[in-house]
Image (cartoon, rainbow, N blue to C red):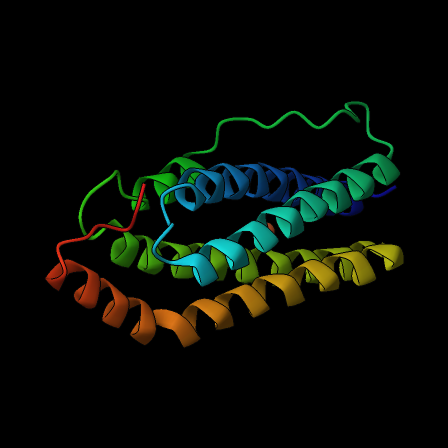
Length: 172
Ligand SMILES: [Fe+2]
């Protein structure tokens, strides 16, 4: 193995590990929101679906890391500043948290879309052919979630206004 290959492999492995940490952060952030959305049942149900998908995405990354057969094959998420920054986008209970979290969720999904596109390129450069199908599946799920959020920004805003005028919150 040349040093260039070695370094490419390290970049790829680091990318897989980082995305694994992002997925676990995504699961945590979605779980935190989903319990406070009783007035937004459609959103709550789409989020539950994406929690399940995110768990599968994390498993796929574990599978790819295991196949790399590295010295540290167990996946242990390290604290990443980027994940901390993404988490900071999420808002604590506040009257308009559903609106602000919509922006944050939309940004988060796009972070993940970019990450999977980059991982797909790294997998190709590394010659990890079986990664292509798995990473592509995850990419499609992130894109579908981003599109769902996009299509619901207007309705979420309208519902928020209607509930606010009726003196209600997102629900708890
Ligand atoms: Fe994800």
